[in-house]
Image (cartoon, rainbow, N blue to C red; front, side, top):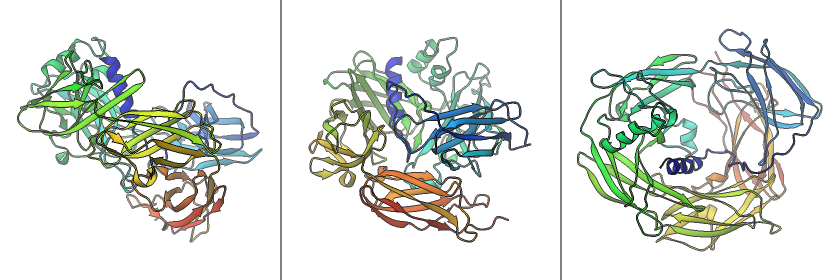
Length: 563
């Protein structure tokens, strides 16, 4: 049961990709030796609160603009908080510092907002000195969970959630509440969630048994207490701080830099119901020991959901379910084949029974990935992501074989956006067709358990390049750490995955490589210097790129003067 739970969790986590994020890495690929360069980067890491040097902080350079095993350089600060990175290759790097108890900080970041910071560009034999990282103390949410008699509750999952940011909503990457961190209560009923950025959070407590699995304990993780909870069900409803049952009634916890906020819970017993059903396997028979997960709609939070495993007859029973809207899902992974499915259900004041989750109705999509010279790319992965938030389908993914062939199994009816992750340097997806239809225009449509042909994906290393500078229109000075977004024009729900994002470097310069030929719109964005003010954005600039073309787009932003 534990093995299957881990597999299902891995499938779900592997399918959650962020905008502009690199694809999965192949751990079995041999690591290349780090070549020696002739650049040097040095500086100091201090506390933003009092300026004191931070000893044992970790400083890293990670090579950008590469798909496959980037060069990584690192150092640990001395007693004076100083570091020095030597023999660094010329190139563009993500540059950051970290220390226990503090928020990670990227180079030239002006705030703790996500995505802040600049790239570091190094020319041959360049020395960059006096870099200063001012690390901000991370926030903490802590508290105690007790039952209706005031007794501490052990193994309760406490989850910190946040709303999607304005940028995430704009990019259509996230529309649901997202889990930031999770912890389980100890034998005193206490929990502590650390490493949090300043902001507004919602805190949720759920007796699921998953917390015992995460943190272990005297019952060895998924032991007797957890199994009893699955059999008997919880009598306590999931609760949002400060003690309400519905998310829209919850009060956010406002957290400032370095602050520790207390959020206690007194759990309440309410009438809870049972959700009963069965899982049918890919062979049409009952699927034994399949893990079934029940999660609240509108919240991306695996560990505060409810779950159980099927018996030898494929039957399951999830007890202790409060009223609400849920997604119920399950999945299997056997002999290299993946099958997943989910359904949206409504739970009221009565038990829900006769739910059937079928793993046998999905389509099998055959395909291949080829290069312009008919050579299959090394270490590629193909992902199908459901485009509708209400979809009753799960993401599907598979690795590409050495000959370029692949097979996606158990793909449920629905509409999907295609993502292809390539680890080969300089590669990009030139085109993709499902039968005669362009997958980046029409998507991958599965109807009545079948696809409209094979999925043919062509990759190339003849992409275009776009670069430029972002400057302050008033001062005519470079804007360091501005976010550049390149979107396909026109953009739709199927080609949005081809958009790219990068930050400007210390010279206000940006570079985007390996771009498919076509039309785009490029915009620049920086955070406003005013507290809580909206970001400053440029108007979209149209650009058309041909194969091998190196385009240039310079952007000017009007930055209001900070008071």
